[in-house]
Length: 243
Image 1 (cartoon, rainbow, N blue to C red):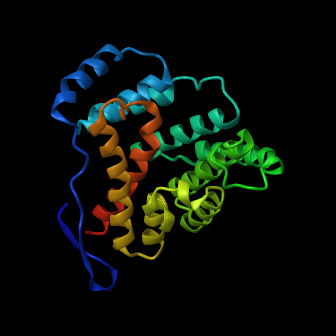
Image 2: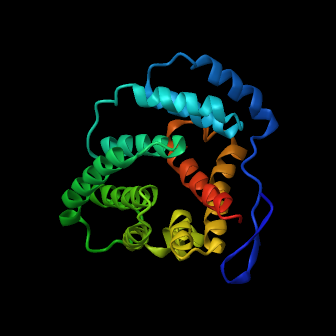
């Protein structure tokens, strides 16, 4: 991807995409082969992400399409909202409309948040989060991701700021104190400034690369698909704008 002209005449380098450690390539191929005929949407989406990590985008997209044809697991609350968010992310990767899935995810996250807010502790700085606080944090984070994938960049930034208010600074990963990766990308896209988009995409990929490097986190599993999609959206924008 190299270098690109940015808003204001600045230039920034974009780092290479994620690389799977050589020791894990064979293991991942074996895992993807073993779960090739799964009828579990979670597993199929995980396979899609595995192929994406390997750079095999045709196989990735085939698995994503298969996952959308499978019935959604019977879930509600945060799990139900995350399922709809994941289906929306799959649509974004496939360049299909994610509107219906993201709208449902937003509704469900908002219900979780509404139920959790009255029971939040007065002191949010405790080392152990109460269940309502944990749910509120997840719902706010989910709402910011929904807004980003829906191309609602101002709303994404607002939700991200509200999400940070629920987490004491000492618990935040230091770079996130100035903005979550997708929040930075949202700002850059809204302002047509590639600088924040580059930083946000790289931060998102650094998280996934760390998961790849340590191995045991298995980033090809379903839970990482949204993070992968956020990074890909940033990369697409940079490609489309010559950055």
